[in-house]
Length: 377
Ligand SMILES: Cc1cc2nc3c(=O)[nH]c(=O)nc-3n(C[C@H](O)[C@H](O)[C@H](O)COP(=O)(O)OP(=O)(O)OC[C@H]3O[C@@H](n4cnc5c(N)ncnc54)[C@H](O)[C@@H]3O)c2cc1C
Image (cartoon, rainbow, N blue to C red; front, side, top):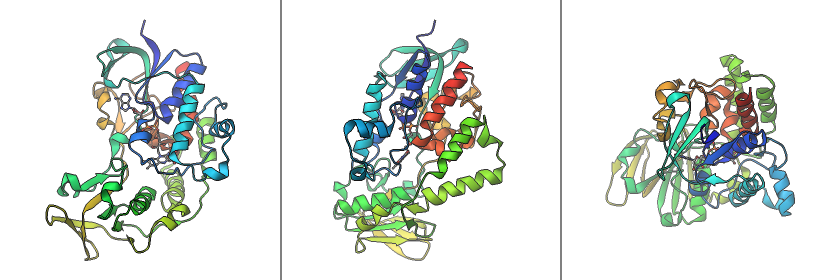
């Protein structure tokens, strides 16, 4: 008999949601990973969330984010936008309420001999499981510009590595990218005393306005109401919805950033890209821009987002030859199962088959219900 019916690999929002719901449905479940490590270690501690209290983790509808606010006696108006520290406290509260004992060992490699799974753990132990749900998040999928390697390693960071800013006080920084993370990192650099910040991006300068994510609810509800809904849509309709999501999420940025982007420090460089890099001396690099300008900077921050590449998830190497993948995304059934029976994948890696909402916490409860429902079918 395997050690557990279900092994959840990943202790982020998707892992928490799935493990809690699987337990509630009577499935023997173990969950491994470092609790909320991506949020704790790869996001700045003074960051704010874009999502609100209405996005919850609980597939059973009890321990919602709103319930956490109520129990802690927090005034929503005083926490809008939500600081990352409040979100993390909420996830810890959720973990306690659901009695999730996260085993903090990491999976070194996963194999699937004899129709069951074997996870070799970083502490030398092994966990065997009937099924595995992998919730790898986005940490392995960082996207970098082609020229990035030409910048000396000590003078460049991806936003997922750049969580502290004091060392860049007084520095000249180029932020490459123009979405929320680019402008939020620019704001954080301002807060921490950077001397000059150029935000370089191919598209127009985004709008800064309050947006509502409410339109997403209907799409997520539809995903649950109709098995395989997103996959059943024609490419044009998928693109239309993706564009709607893109307009709200990527082309419109949070208005609370504006006052923090000091005019005398931050220069927006829309419709521009870096065409070449020259190392000037031990401190500076010079970026030649497509509009003919040259920028001499001390540091480059790549805010270029994430691109799915399942092969980049190290612990999946031992099963990858049995997992069908398209454009870096696993091909999933309407129940989040890969082509390797018993292996489920949720989160950003599932967005090709489930829609862009499943890269955000909005998708956690429904992904948990769908995947666990599939396991019980
Ligand atoms: C700057 C930024 C801001 C964001 N803001 C928001 C927001 O406001 N709202 C929102 O909904 N989303 C936001 N997101 C998206 C957010 O990343 C996802 O919603 C969320 O993290 C997805 O959760 P996850 O569980 O899939 O992955 P993650 O949170 O990344 O969790 C991955 C887990 O896997 C574990 N793990 C890794 N390797 C192993 C291993 N070998 N063995 C075992 N475990 C392992 C890690 O320890 C971690 O626990 C933001 C993302 C970024 C980059």
